[in-house]
Image 1 (cartoon, helix red, strand yellow):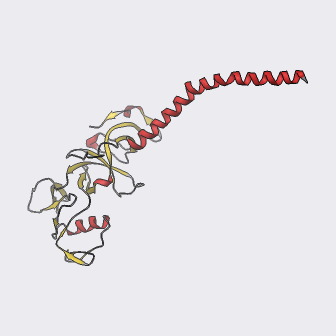
Image 2 (cartoon, one colour; image 1 turned 90 degrees about the vertical axis):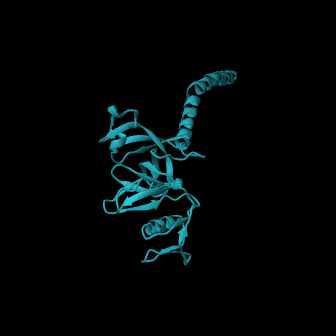
Image 3 (cartoon, helix red, strand yellow; image 1 turned 135 degrees about the horizontal axis):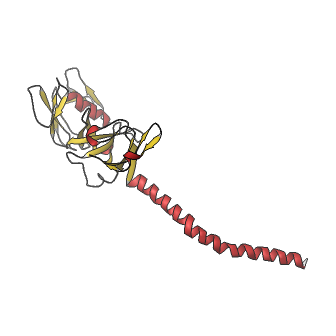
Length: 231
């Protein structure tokens, strides 16, 4: 019996002696790894995020399959996009909607000119076919015309208004005919070289893309696409 007690005591002491070594390993290896993972999660969801380019954007130097890093803090607080900024946004304004990439070409309160014949958008009038469209700023009164009625009706529906568009381009809100409308959000005119996206509200903006982290093709990482700045 005494031998048994002595053996158990030695076994317990051995375990106790191993504890400081395990704690040192935890502090040296496991704890830093856990902290690094936590930092990555915080950075991923609050500061930087990454999206896959579904197609090429020639003017940016982006190719299909590229992973684009986006600064989520670029348009937080009082920061707002400026004309010429590259912007990442959710076109459907839903959290699960795919992220699109475009260039901001007009700001809230600006006027863009739409060539209905050539389907072209410009910051200035170029031909007799061009029709003006005011980019809404939050609270700004915009007069309804036959040329902007459908676009305004579409935006009002997205903001949750009970709105009706008549065949003669008149707009009714809550059953009442209105001549001017105002919006809750600032809007931006976003477009790419090949496809204009149109009016996008501030709440749909994700951030500012700034580089390609890497590219993928046929499931293989492209080494020639590592950490490239956008053109």
